[in-house]
Length: 481
Image (cartoon, rainbow, N blue to C red; front, top):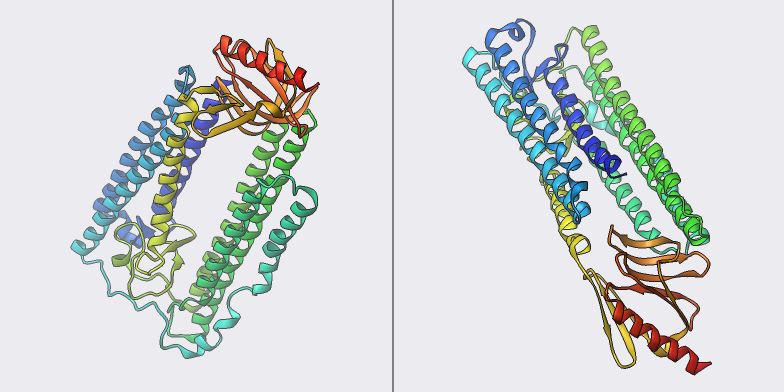
């Protein structure tokens, strides 16, 4: 099982590498008019210096990928540790992804600048074309007909509304599921923002011919606004299905029929299908734009490729003269204009995600390396587990108590667990629902029933203290009887 978990971690990172290699293919492919984000056409692509720059980029990327591929072998060593597998895995995975993305960015920036300098030295640079539409008022007046209708947003809206209605009628007792549903709303709002920015952004100048300009802008805006709405529907749907699977798991645990395998299988299948559908929608949108540009350019004997290399020389788009937040990427899909006030948000969201993951890994260190402590007072006992879990059990609230030589068969409904500790909400087979704070290395286990009918199970490694607490609780229950 440890090997399978380590392999799943490594596979996740290998998938990230595959995505970056996929991106490398698109910025160096032969059929594109752009090469490492620079406009290189015709015989220029066969130039010896151009070929050397491309080879240098590929070599450095493949060396980096080989090093990072080997670095994932650390995950197969983590299961050998006695403690810290969970927190250290999260920290290492985040640092690995940070290093990979940073190195990839630095390499692409380095070779994009080399290609740009090469163009300047060889005199291939042409005047930058003004690509923000300010003059073609004919096309501007028809701008509202370009994006797909906002009515399409009704699909993700009703998925979000339906998920809350479902929770209210079917899963209101599991308030923790609201977190998943709220993330659904946040994702929908983000896609609404993307739709608004793409639908109402300024148009591009492809040609002085208004008809051609209108056709190219209309295809582009309809393709990408439609793509955004489809992606919103897919993400909201996936999030809702994930919530349903979690609810089924929690209800099965409460019934004493824990089915972790079914939950994991469902999540893996849904994730795989969602990723496949995401990619299909994305490539369909990109294909429509590319095909339309190709056909219209051939029919009008017009080249739509603009020499905006000065805005792409660092590997990303930075054009203060373009107020559009989202623009077409020179490799594939859409990109962010880092010169806009919202553009840097992309960078900070990425940085914030890495910081959040590192913080999560650090926050889990007490769970992996913490201890279970029990303090016995005059009227109650208090248990402190791994910094985050604390429970007080008044002696006069106990109606039944059992001293067990081993933990009863149980299923965790909510909480945390490691090879040594288990804390949170549990279902105890043969007893019922309740809370538990357990040290798996303890010799004894005490299960106490409160006046409200809920059970509380606990154990610490100090056997003498456990026996003493049991005697105290037993005396209390006999006294009340």
